[in-house]
Amino acid sequence: MQELVRKNIWELKPYSCARDEFRGRVANVFLDANESPYNSGYNRYPDPLQENLKKMIAPLKHVSEDEIFLGNGSDEAIDLVYRVFCEPRVDNVVAMAPSYGMYEVCANINDVEYRKVLLDEHYQIHADDMLKATDEHTKVMWLCSPNNPTGNDIDRREVKRILDEFQGVVVVDEAYGDFSELRSLRELVRMYPRLIVLNTFSKAWASASVRLGMAFAQPEIIALFNKVKYPYNVNNLTQQYAIELLSDIEKLERWIRDIKRERNNLLPSLKEVKCVKQVYPTNANFVLVKVTDANRIYNFLVDRGIVVRNRNNVQLCGDCLRITIGNKQENNEMLAALRSF
Ligand SMILES: *Cc1c(COP(=O)(O)O)cnc(C)c1O
Image 1 (cartoon, rainbow, N blue to C red):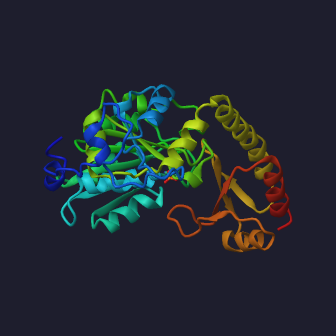
Image 2 (cartoon, helix red, strand yellow):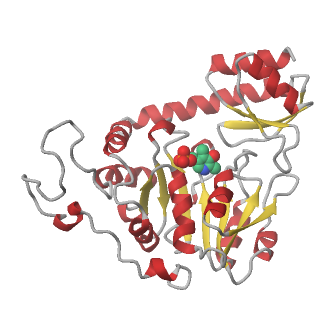
Image 3 (cartoon, protein in one colour):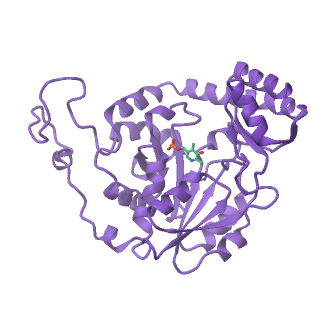
């Protein structure tokens, strides 16, 4: 692990916050953090390691608490991967393409070379192609399953080959994993010390606005993330909200079931629409659709107050729109507008 981590990060002595120092003991007079004593509801700093929340997440995700990192959206975890493992202007990463845009943006911000490996005509990866793109400075490989914007699961055999053969860190972003029938790769974290799996509160858990992302990995990687993150990266409103949300698991399961049902209803109808040339298979809460003229249809929909994502300019996604599965009424409205084009 030491060989993979940037030297300055490996040697970093992290900021020690006031609450860290007394941890584990009991107190009722807090004069250690220069907080206000007036109970505004928010006068105290939040738990820097979000322990109560992690206690609720651990059994849900079948991991232990020290295998969880929580951040200000998955985007924080994505950025931390670069800051922990990639030496600017020296190291590089390899990523399947097209995929989620933040991997590349964070590479550019951190001045790290980003090597794209194009998916095949079924939007699948091939481990050989990914491995061929690596060199001795490749620290990280980015995989996303189900993939955004294509919607499909990535072939498990290829992922396992990468895990077995690539010597760097493998990140598998499962932001949409709850909508897939495949088992989560979280269950492989105990076997692969260089695997990081990303999940988020933003999609299936219907909480994009509170900004809460999860990374799962062995405790050594989690400890590196905790060392580099801002001390109070997840605010207390978000922690409290998430604890409340997770106290009703049946509600979360119902949301996921309902989206999958709506997806199953929508796909056959989409295929019947005249301006739709292809509906790609999806295991996510969105569907990629090839249409006759993506730019015109995108604007036509916007004129009717319906916003979808125009992916026309994305490699391998010419004339494609990415359409999120909404509720029944929203989906029907979108369908009716498409039919009237
Ligand atoms: C939406 C999405 C996320 C979520 O990011 P947050 O910062 O947690 O909202 C992560 N990865 C992918 C591929 C996504 O599409």
